Length: 139
Image (cartoon, rainbow, N blue to C red; front, side, top):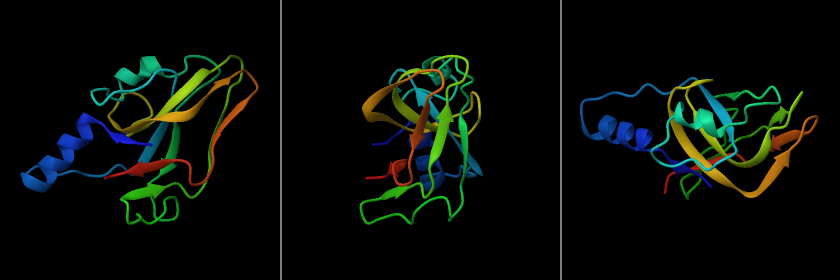
């Protein structure tokens, strides 16, 4: 479901093979997307692809052992608790993807993916990514 952004690919390669260091974020911010992200997108450029109404904000998720499963043999990791958004006072629109960012606004996009089944989220409705449905894969 997930792909790495150009930013994260370059950061990991520079960290492993060169003298650059990488400090992992202590919180990931999960963004809902109305339009698909691309490798070249950043936390800033996807702002225009996120819902602009309904009191939408990126959701913070801790980067701790109890929030994420141990990586599996296939190089995949998943959330261990659900994450929800509720549209209030306006519609989120058609949610077709998600992104993992290192900031609540702007910043860097790390991973992104498209939903198997996009969903139109209207005012008063909730959108939930249940436990095990928010994944990241390195393969």
